[in-house]
Length: 181
Image (cartoon, rainbow, N blue to C red; front, side, top):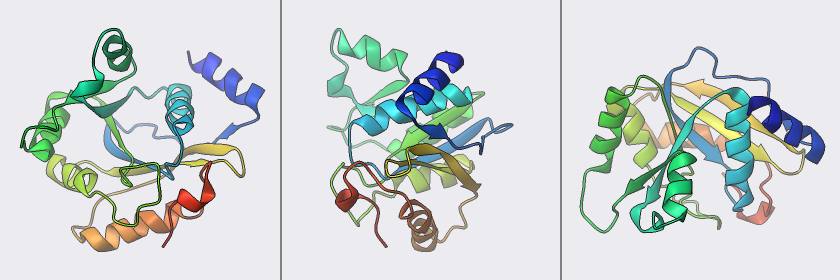
């Protein structure tokens, strides 16, 4: 599959960043800017080309037949958002029970511009004691992949600003909806 993903990128004229999460077994991945459904397709192919089996939290309602089967095969983990549950604890426990886990989040929470990011990814990383990987998609330069890794400092606002300062360098499919400082 790695070879096929790399070939598809070559055919469509995209490059995958050489930064690799090599040696890393567990992390929260923050992906951005998220402005299009194509981001998922490109991101999934990039993870395949890196040899990373990424997982995604997806609302349980999407897991109906036959879509549910496909979502699970692609790394989807159903989450019941209609109930009050401690998603941070559930995700942290998932890290503890997994030998390897790359859990991907788009902190904007929408494909439209949103300066008020959801912070759950951050609290999950802190609770699970795993680093945060910053991954990106850049339509302007037809490039994407892993940018960098860091450990949360405990200062949520400062760390999120740090992530935004990285991701605002990249252009989403719809630039006006991307990450801004």
